[in-house]
Length: 390
Ligand SMILES: [Zn+2]
Image (cartoon, rainbow, N blue to C red):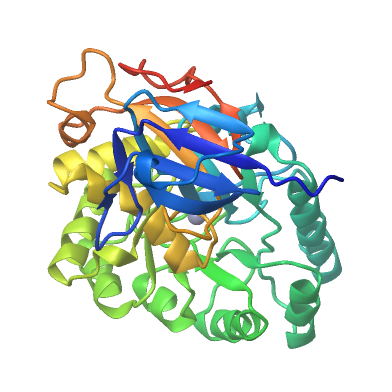
């Protein structure tokens, strides 16, 4: 190994989005990354850009922290048995997402439900996605679904082995708030985050989780508050927004009217910083490679949120709620970006107005840990301008 630093310079950026909901845009036209981390943000003329191993000419497009899908159900590699689909993660990278968080590897055929088996699978899933990133995507997986019979030492053992997330509470045999709360508390004690399946049953065999159960369980994230697919009645969604102090997760695979209710309620409560986005894919409605971009455009347009703020739901808010080192344009964070521009022939005076009119942007490049992971998206509408490696 040489001790040469790996430097990536991205210059001629037209607009910097930060992921910080209190200041979603920043001044500057250049970002410098060293060994996979952001080391400088500003104007090229003021920055040290010497010795770059990779230089990207952004050609005036917008740079944002890579998008985060807070709710996916991966199984193994870039294959999902749920809809018999290959390369769904690569397709999602082409939708601007650079980090995915597993809400449980529940589509594994023959998924073990005994305590030893579920722990073994969670640890193995954490390993196989740590060891293999499909197309460069960071897949934070290994999320066990709690089952009756688990004890405190099981959560310690999982945490010691590197497990950081629980799968959705409610997808296993634990359906009562008291037991779920006990297990979520043990998980939290050892540094494992938790989420819950909010709403009606997803597929035959799963069950209803109502607001009382969500509140009693007290997970770190209210998983798909807008249902996956069936949403809770409005008064229960409002109650969750009022009473929960952590992530309010809206998913593509849920009820869109309930998504807007959540957004509007969170805004009234001055809790927009708690709104985070996921797809819940792969699921009954399939894989949604552009799901996060579609949520941003939908919430911005129908929810009347400026687009720069709406992008924060898809990166910085999730990073903060879930304690990640990605998703924010700040020195020291991982150099994970999406470069995008207004789509060709999409109305609007610029990318932000175009998104607020409900249009998707065109993705031109993704970068993960300072390395280019994709070029012009094969999934989004074509962008007006495309960044280039020079
Ligand atoms: Zn669910």
